[in-house]
Length: 429
Image 1 (cartoon, rainbow, N blue to C red):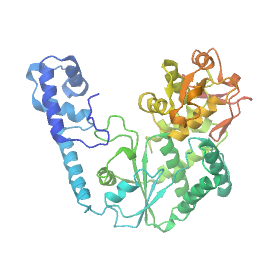
Image 2 (cartoon, one colour):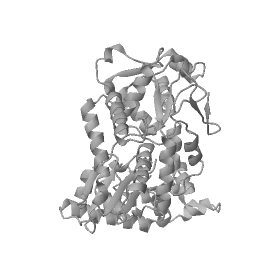
Image 3 (tube, rainbow, N blue to C red):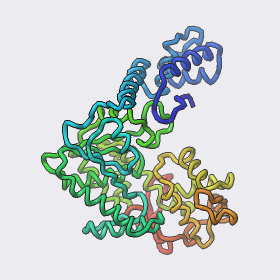
Image 4 (tube, one colour):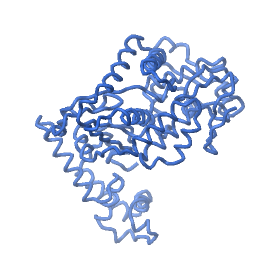
């Protein structure tokens, strides 16, 4: 990988200058990796015209460096770095420019990971952590919000081993604050591209389609990458100085986006995944990051070949190579296998527990580590797990616990919805 080594989006200009000089020197010397980088990122190579390495100039290697860092030009990368540095200096001096004082604002995020960074960067509005992980557990159609809160909080308490009253109080508080948000002139939504965020965004825009007051302004920040970060997972990776930059690029939520998310929410909560798949196949141009997230959500259905979800399959594949302690297994899954990371650690442990609850579990915990907390327990694949990966076994025959994917209830003792990855279809069998 040839991106900046930092993972928080801070790019050092002097380091980039040095990298450009090194790249130029190595390419002129015929280093194959350096030449490949020019082929990947320099427009003359992309046009098929070729380029003689001995005529390369520093500007050519600077262009490659900029494009590797997701900028169209060196000058635009430099401008970005300068802007980030100016904001950083004001934050460190504790005199950041106030960002959202023109309107009383409620910032909504499905998590608290950016709350402090917003404050540091000069945001003065209120913050709502709306954290209901719709990507796991029952999300059926209900007409009564109180019933829905009871259902969700009960699942969260049991699945994530949280005290029941604490889980209920947290969920109820989030929904109550959302219901009471009509007095804010502006509501700003901060989201990224994974299914955890996008399903939450779908719910919120479904909600605001009906509950947004006429005088309210609804704005959206939604990203799937940030300059300088090769493996972007989420907004929580970013430093405080990135927040004003994202704020300057926010967009007004459109009526078409509200209507799309209303359809998504109705489809997500339906007992069949067919309508949701139909939405995926449109590509959701109103919200381009939505379709890939919904597709990833559907890939958590049992696959027709072996009954495993995509997360379950990745986990067994990792363990088939080597036993792992829980936290390392989660790290490998998130950073090396998962195409669209969406799980928090407790959510992942819930998935592993489901596998451990089978009549012939496809994985096991090494006995000497069993008394430890799950991140320190060492997990290994079993003969059942190997048979599943070879498609010599099907998870349905191992009697896994029932589970939900949105509004789809999967009781694998009965015919149920399954996923066909090859044809991108759902079948009921």
